[in-house]
Image (cartoon, rainbow, N blue to C red; front, side, top):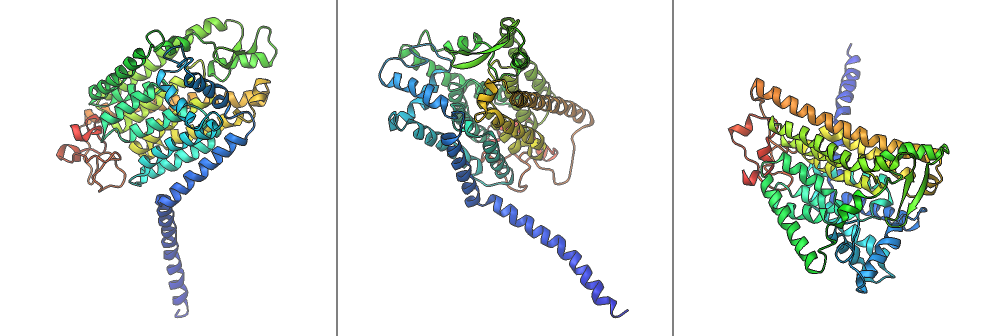
Length: 480
C-alpha cells in the first residue's frame, strides 16, 4: 500500500497539471492574438499576398484599375469630362475622388499608387478596429484578415474596397461619434450605393435615427450642391438610371438559369460583352422581362427585411442583436437580388459581419463562417479562372452557382435570426425583465470595462442592471 501512494499522487498531479498546461497555452494564444506586432504583422502579410496576386495573378485582377479607372482619371485630368458630373456615370460622383488620388503618381505609377491607397484605407480601418485590442475587436480583426485572404486580389482591385474601409470605420465609431460616423456613411454611399443599406439598418434599429438621418442628408446635400456647381445638374443622379437600365451580368444569382442554358447550348442563350457598361452579360428567352422585374424585386426584398427588423425594434429587442442582423440581411439582399452580382460585391459583407462580431460576439460566428466560405467560393472563379467561366466551363459554373446559393443561405440565416430576435423580445416582455446576477449591458465583452467598442461609457443604472442585453437606447449611450 505504501508503494502505491507516490504513484497515485503522481497520477493525480499529472491530471491536475494537464488542465493547467492547457490553460497556459490558451492564455499564451490569447496574448499572441492581442499582440499588436502579431496583428500588424498578419495585416502586412495578408496585404503582401494580395498585392502579389493582384500584380502577378492571371485573369487580370487589376483590369478595372488599368482599363477603366485610369482612363476615367485621365479624362478628368485633361479636362475632357468628369464622370458623374459633366457626363452620365454608373457610379455616384464622389467615386471619382479615390479614382483620381492615384494620379498623383502619374499614369505610369497609377497601379502601384492605387494599391497603396487601398492599403492605406485598410490600415485606417484596421487601426480603428483594434485600437483597444479587446477580445471581440481582435476576433473581428483576425476574421477580416482571413476574409480578405479568401476573397483574393479583388479585395484590393476594385473601388468597393475604399467604401468598405470607410463603412467599417464609421460602424466602429457609431456609438461614440455618431455625427462623424453618419458623415462617413454618407460619403461612402456617394462612392458606391450599397452603404445606403447600412444607413437604413441604423435608422431602423437605433433611437437616435433622426440624428443619423440628418447628418446623412446634410452631407448628401453638400455633395449634390458641389456637383451641380461644377455643371452636374443633369448627371449627378445619372447612376440611378444607369443601374436600373442594365441587363443581367453573368455572375448575378438570377442569371444562373441562362448561364446553364448557354452551357447546354439551348437556342437563344449566350454571353455577350456590353461595351457601354464594360461587363459580360447573358442573353436568353424572356431575359428582358426578368431584367425589368429585378429592380422592383430588389426593392421588395429590402422592404420585407426592413419590416422584419422594424418588428423586432417595436418589440424592444436589443439593438446589439437587431442592428447587425438587419444590416447583414439588407446588404445580402442588395447582392442576392441584384442584376450585377460582381465578385467584388462580396466585400460588402465584411462590414455587417465585423459589427456583428463586435456587438453580438459568438452569436455571429455562424454568419461569419458562412460569409468566409462565400468569399472563398468567389475566388474559385475570379480572377484566375474567369476565362473558363466565360467559356462556360461546368466546374466554374458550379462554383458561381454555389457562391450564389451561399448568398441566400446567409440571407436566410439573417432573416431567421432577426425574426427570432423579435419573437424572443416579445416573450421576454410578457414574462417580465430577466434578472441575472452579474448581468451586463452591451458590449458583454471584457466585463468590467466601462466603455463600448466606440469608447463611450455605458449607462449602468438599475434599469440596465436588470437586463442581460441592451435596448435600442443604449446604442448611443452618450446621448441617452
